[in-house]
Length: 110
Figure: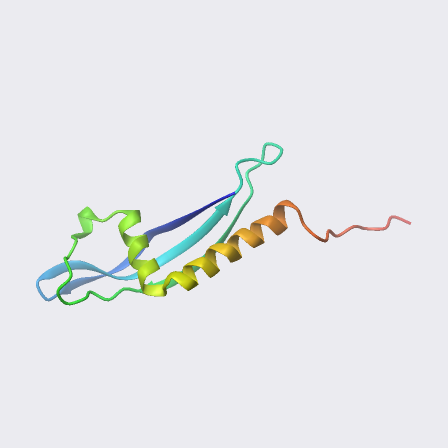
């Protein structure tokens, strides 16, 4: 099982001081996926929104030079290492429950 972060969807402030298209909010996803189980890929995801502050004195990266990795680093820094661990553990646990459930629903036919 593998965990990936998707931070590609953002809300930008069109102008902020001398800058344009400044990332202000990130719609993030934490995704856990299996390779394949009986020809089927199984996944689970958690989603959220994180406000991003442009810190005074930090290097500004123009929107055209952003990547998923850069923005995910911003999100992870903003929410903190403990919350990142909690989210990744939670999504992996939910996926594990899908792959090998502790309980299943069955119907008695007679």
